[in-house]
Amino acid sequence: MGGFPIALVLFAGIALFLVLRLRSVLGRRVGFERPPLAPQARAPGPVIEGEATAQPSGRPVPDPRSPLGAKLMQIVNRDPHFDPPNFLAQAETAFRAIVTGFAAGDRAALKPLLAAHVYQTFEAAISAREAAHERHRTEIKSILTAAIEDAQLAGELAAVVVRFVSDQVNVTLDATGTPLQGSEAVAEITDLWTFERDLKSPDLTWRLAAARMG
Image (cartoon, rainbow, N blue to C red; front, top):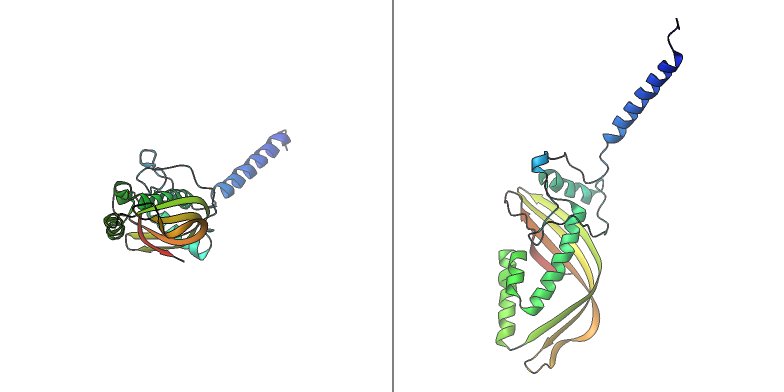
């Protein structure tokens, strides 16, 4: 080697190998990732109730390589605020707030969480219940399942469907407290809720746009 240190050549080879290895690993997309935001534009997690959270629910979300995951990736790539695990955690929080808010007739709590047409339907039902001097009691014992079932991006309108399976107590009472419908027994209820958001809007709230049992 003409006096050139063999150890130096070996160290240079090892260093080059490590650099190439790191580049191959760091360049992979392993989940619902998107290009990083500029530091001043870095955004919090998704919003359901108007406040962001960084605490995911721990419930599984679709694999980004699956057909449903690909639909979610369309929203991820379009909206830097959207993160499926955090969205699902906030959707579960919204589910509890909407179910209990409707039972209590709490219009102020419901209005920010519902699309306009859904709020009108809920408000009409609450008003009819009040006119009949009835009240409704709902207790969510547990949410067994909260899972993303579908997602769509139509222009600037994003929609995500979530299936909730919950154990609930639902009782409708008359003015004297006598049960009219339901019972104190715990029943398993399955709901399919669609949350929507206009991605052009600065309002980050995902609102309930449709709900059905299924």
